Image 1 (cartoon, rainbow, N blue to C red):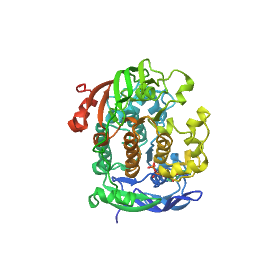
Image 2: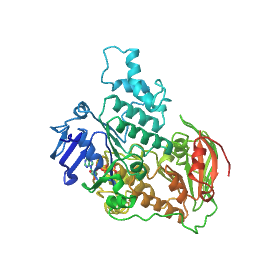
Image 3: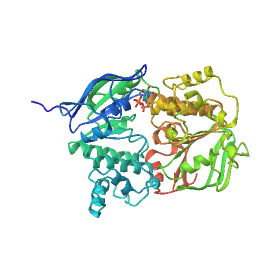
Image 4: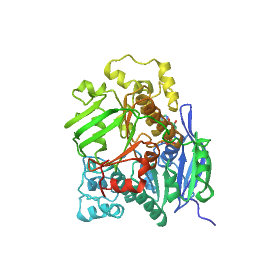
Length: 494
Ligand SMILES: Nc1ncnc2c1ncn2[C@@H]1O[C@H](COP(=O)(O)OP(=O)(O)OP(=O)(O)O)[C@@H](O)[C@H]1O
């Protein structure tokens, strides 16, 4: 007799009012198996895994663990069954140290804290990331490091099934490779992993099997060796996606956005940045997260005043000098983690589109215009009156793009604008950046995918430790060279 799967979802359905987020899904996950869960934004992946994790309850269908029916009422129930989940938004407390965060979730905590307990709580993390010191405050960790702490927290709960929700969207290529090895290591120990991802590289590197969702339904499930990448993309979006490259004959005009000896403060500052972005140019900035990109972007976008130096747009200073100016900056801005930094979850979609107008007392766009904007950016569902917090992660990202890229900005600062987006939406957003540049905008694009930067940016600057260490032409460099500059290996001025 064959052993039952670790978890079996049978006819699982979840509705949010009239929206069927999961429609009679059947899915088995065996012990020791890595399943990649794919699907376009809003397909229902996170919802399905939240059902397995007891964060949501199904409206119909059943869940079996080790062959026994279970009602998983809460994450606590899930953890008792050996099911753990690492979310897109982390649940660590930034003001506490790494060790304190691990102890807070430590299931075998005694009445009094002991050195032995500290050691045991840290043991898992030591295997994952020996370089992370227990006393470091979480707020001082790079985002990739935070994710490893979060993962250690889940593994400390003796999880037999680890669910990872888009774990590599914020990681550098090197960190992603480490995570892939780690996932394979977990499978070798007999643990199961579900990895929700938009990246086919993740699927190829570590999955045994793929399951593809589309509009709430499971549309394909197969061994990884039985599907090509083209087949997977087609299963996800229903049609093949044409890649757009750099337009061959774009004319670059005079410098439009100029950063002059710009110094930006903060925990990860940027120092003495001199950059020019010409009219019609897309300047890509590559770098490992936490090397000053955040400070640079917030300063250029006019949210934070510079420590020194200048930001000029068409010769005029756009650096923040007053509170009021922060909202009236002419620079369109997609910040890092837009879900946390650029959306008001309790406001409806129309309100979020109008945030700049609300802040500057400009007239509000009418509801029909808001609906048209949501349609144009493929925000699903495109309902202006819907509360933003009910959108999927990728659709929230599209909402911010719809606000910032919907008009005709003279300059754009876009931080990781395609993070968490499916292939289709990624192409749409990159296409918008190209179109704005073609119309004369100066685009500063802080990117996560080196291949995308190489394919689309006109120039790539690399930031390391707050300084621009290289200024490269895509035709004269490659991913390996950029990776070396990102790691601080060398420096080269343009
Ligand atoms: N709490 C909620 N209330 C109302 N609708 C919701 C809620 N949570 C999710 N939805 C809707 O359910 C659908 C599926 O969302 P889900 O987050 O599962 O998608 P996803 O495939 O994980 O997307 P992404 O790749 O963008 O993260 C979306 O249309 C979303 O707007």
